[in-house]
Length: 338
Ligand SMILES: CC1=C(CCC(=O)O)c2cc3nc(cc4[nH]c(cc5[nH]c(cc1n2)c(C)c5CCC(=O)O)c(CCC(=O)O)c4C)C(CCC(=O)O)=C3C
Ligand SMILES: [Fe+2]
Figure: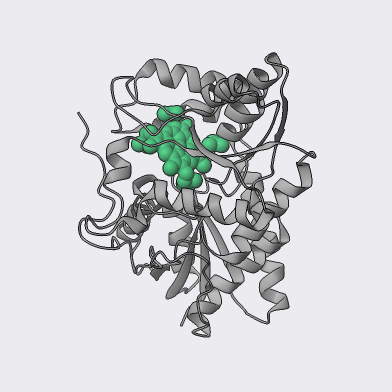
């Protein structure tokens, strides 16, 4: 039923010369102001023009290959990205040349929403359209509420948490209009912000933490357009004013570390906390946790062995579609660009 797995991710630059063309790929047609791009380019160049995301994806793929071998599942894994090499179009061409007729696709995002889900569907459609005899590509479902995802995130918090702390979850902000457009209009359970809140609640609950916050990071776009708030850096100030003296930040919105994690959290949010005399710890992203490889194998088994989906939330399982079809006609439509 499937001859391969395609690991589909965002991509990131791996040298200083890659940064600008990468950013142009990310923002093509998206109305991101040039000043924002200059600012973001400086963040990348601060780290030598290298995002950790591609190396972490390669390492996660190795762990999944080992987990598949342990499970006795013979499925070669291919790696393709939306915005940087290896580009998904090139990878799908290679899959076709290797004789792959049908593949499962693991997108490196656990959630619904335009940027986190439907844009990966668009990548699948684009890549298939570019390749003669492209394989059928079936995308795996959203996994924000899978017990192994929740367990990996909870473990990462426990690994860095001091005795007393405020637990703060963070995810990539999106325009409010994009968040409201996520999921079919009649059904709120696929809304990005609700899934983020639900994953955060599940992690906090499994840790026995009674009070947690959900905040946002890395907003871009023109300032007059409302995005999900509050921002993590502003929130740290608000917590300080409330008397909180120690925070643990869990980047629940992301699978692996990337530039926006190491810049916005490890650099900016940490500096803000330290300037206020607050203790600051950032939990690891789950992608490198061994539970994560097992999670991917379980999601694959839902298809190969018709295994029962394991999920902790009451929200409908969504995101699983063939050949880049959206979940539903009006689901997660891209925001209109001015
Ligand atoms: C929901 C979401 C995720 C999580 C889901 C998922 O993981 O897929 C995510 C992940 C990521 N976002 C990333 C990088 C960027 N995102 C940008 C811009 C944007 N992100 C958005 C949303 C999201 N983004 C949005 C609504 C925009 C505005 C423009 C647009 O509508 O597209 C820009 C442009 C500059 C700027 O505007 O800041 C960059 C460089 C990287 C890789 C970093 C690296 O290289 O290490 C990753 C993993
Ligand atoms: Fe982004």
